[in-house]
Length: 411
Image (tube, rainbow, N blue to C red):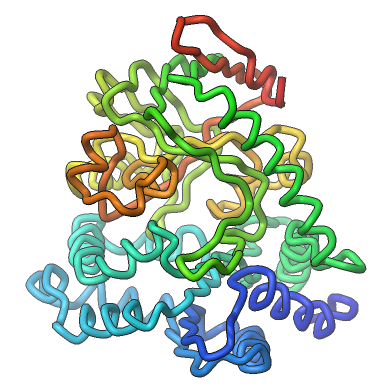
């Protein structure tokens, strides 16, 4: 790395991740999901976690080449059936209320050579085995965090005109910038960001719109909102009352869609990197909350496999508002990584709603959530729909409209 003061910034990043992000508490178990290519950052995160009092840090290493080998050569029976120890480990970690740190660094199309059907088989079985992890995360029973780290293959996708080394340096620079690590006091900068986003969430919660109407050159859709829905912003509390920030960076406020009341057409405005492949030009048509038609310019088969994952992937679980004036949008960079690109654009998610996005939702059964229009699924996949010509109105109970966003920005 030739980036000036890289080690110092990486130290600040690891501190931000463990202290302000997942908020490590004394005596906790921490799970770190990270690539073998990020050894230096992994060691710094582990060290910081122990300094904050963690009892143990469980590191789950991943390597794209090994993963590809497994997905291409394992039997279909193995892909469709997870060993008992996978779910047992997940259950035991969640019984400990282990906090999760996920570091994303892979290339957006790193699994493009894997047959989409085989990949879908594996993801479905893994989703079932990790059910306890999914439920604990979606309920905010645990603190959890998703962050990024630069890898040369990903960096070359983002900055193809630079050398591999220069691209990696540039991507790290952008990661440090968007997570506010480059500022003198990142913690203070995050306090201000959280306060700003909370003001937007409070305004939306006060209005309790029954639906949002989206209109742009590519999208014309009305998305219902459940009664007593809750808009969330940058941070929230886990079941023990510890404050954490699930995504760094984040520029969004979000809530749940009512999966019984979605009608119209919605189109993507940025590429979606999903399961190691790129899906571009998504167009979904909804009637009475369900997807009745799906298209994509590239990756259409993968999109259709995603939609067929389970009953919940035939609808939307989350809607999220992000202004076009956000720092990531204004950078003009397409990161080909949802963590970053979703913070440049309004987005929606196919699949699960977060139970905490409705009053009392974390105490509801899946059936009760469904009765309130909350989508239940083993997966949750965001894709970006915002643009500089996007207008969004909030629809009140009496049918009147309140401007929420105009030309992609807060009205």
